[in-house]
Length: 511
Image 1 (tube, rainbow, N blue to C red):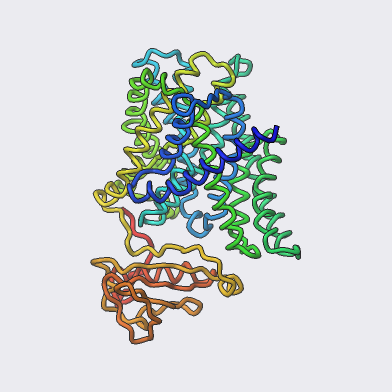
Image 2: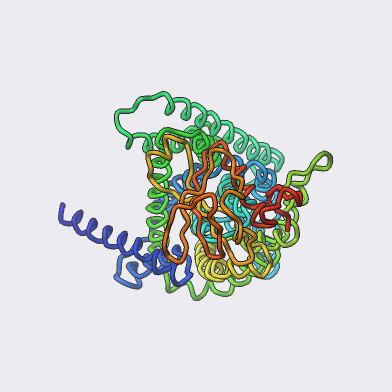
């Protein structure tokens, strides 16, 4: 009995270690790591090492567990100060955008592929959700305007909730028990209740963790992640959206300056990586390579409709509806045509559509096998195409932001005690930071440049240190002044030491 367990542990550990080291290789090659994990699953599967796995129900269950962890990590690392300005656009993309995407893909699948309306709309529903893991892993490596990155991250965290509800509804054995307006009311209730439960769990958990004197620092990360799982469970028990509850609870907890916050974020990040690896390998195991060739044409037809029609139309419709009719418009809801084009191209699909495709597969929905195969092929092709070209697309559209400071996650007790973050800022070519002295940055009290890395060597700068192109700055900023410090750095980067005289306030420009 233990012999089988030992072999399973040996194979599992080997796969895990190969997957971990494959991240470095995929990063160097510019390939999304999820494709590497899918390939590992297919290699050890029935067409490779001969491990046969065809349990769609188990895959769906484990896939949901992995998504809970991935979405929780996204919520915990989201900053409310950057999320709030784009919340309207992100919510519109996760609702209106999803509806537009489902309809467009459904119409194309019905008239071109000849699918019945139920299966055609199911194609649209499964593919309407962007993937949190793919978005987080890809965008955080690029220097982009924060509003675009935050919009895409928030969309990927929010749109799983309505999409799961719609896929389950369309996969049900019998449709039409209730009128359409009843189903709309149920979906609205589940989303609203899920958000409310997420807020309640997050606020209660934040209050408890701040006052609980746990005997070990290692218990705080476990408790924080446990609270997000509690939010999901409470949401599902209340017949609400558990995924939305997870994301909202994560956002509330992550912005609460929890004890040992760095340890919490590090633990959540490690769990999210483990969930991604396990999920993608499992999905690769479930796929049958012999059937994938036959799904190539449907995948290309639906994929082109998704990328060239559904996604751009959903972004345009969402951006229009997110703008208030009266009153001041939030800067985060105005992205301009360049930002709209980038949002259209950056709607990455990853493991989420494949997991969603296991719902009709496990329910025995007619045509579910073809749906799963087509989605699997589509994810491989278009993830490789889109993720590999995001950097070049950003440069072509002029939406790169080399003057953005990137947060560095490190374990440092002094920073924890100060409630401070460590930021890195590169002095890129063309930045007006070049030639500016440290004391001319005029950073607020609580923010300071602690190290400058120049030509591979680091030194502690003084007030009279003059910055050069190619320098990398490490900046310590307390939570209270971080946003002000970042705006000041952006302002100087764009207009130089006389930024204030030119009226430059450092707020993110519209494309």
